[in-house]
Length: 300
Ligand SMILES: NC(=O)c1ccc[n+]([C@@H]2O[C@H](COP(=O)([O-])OP(=O)(O)OC[C@H]3O[C@@H](n4cnc5c(N)ncnc54)[C@H](OP(=O)(O)O)[C@@H]3O)[C@@H](O)[C@H]2O)c1
Image 1: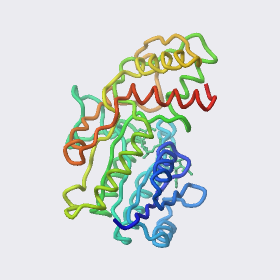
Image 2: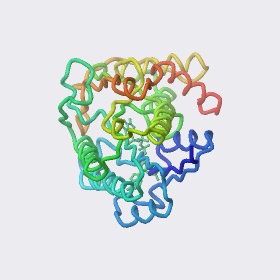
Image 3: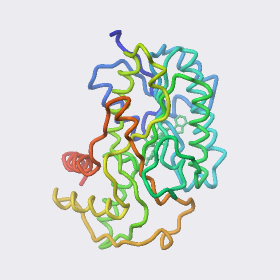
Image 4: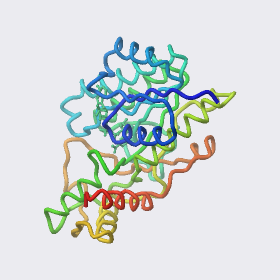
């Protein structure tokens, strides 16, 4: 197969960094464009950057991800998450390259009792989810050659995420109150990056690409509540000699946030398994790997 050229939007984000590590290890030719060099909301700049790179594949990991702040900055959230995603898709189409675009469980309202499948009705609860849903629609409208991956509860050893927040608070407090009525699947950025890389390989090698295009759910295997996730972080950290404290279960009503979160974020990932033969590792196993990495780096 011809050596792939991959254009990644996003540079310092959790998934972008994991993807860069993954592509570097595989010896791919790739470029990561972060906010300092490319504002994805600038259509002309995106068109120029993608055309100059001549990619075989475009991956969009860049997004406005501050869920609470998006309530007050919804214009900016839409500019990045909808217009930016659409700009990248249009540039990918012009370059005759498929696009893999990362989306979110927050397109759903969380009222379903079972895990969500791709065909379920969307109904975002907040501005972030609405902007990401609009982004999915913009990508699909601009580029028929797209794979949209909805993921959930992303964490990594770097960046800003729930695992690192829990470990920081564990150093400062004896107890942390965490909601026990929000269910989902933690997803390791490294696992998602590996999934994106394999999907790219499969799509680029396929003779019947259109069969592969569409929306997929791609989250860690298994499910847990935020509270149980926090307890697993503490257990894993304590086992490695890192910080740990008590976790007290509370309800979402007791912890009001600017943006409402879905109570049920569980994503049914069987379409990804059926079409691409891919299943992400169990969230608990990947959490252990993340904590071991933090320990090895001296970060805990
Ligand atoms: N974090 C989660 O729990 C979660 C859950 C579900 C879905 N997702 C989705 O997963 C994807 C990756 O998330 P993540 O956790 O890696 O996010 P992240 O760590 O917040 O990184 C997002 C990156 O997007 C880049 N960015 C923001 N605005 C930009 C703009 N105007 N132009 C260019 N780049 C811009 C940022 O700049 P730099 O690259 O320069 O730093 C940022 O680092 C996003 O689509 C997100 O919606 C995340």
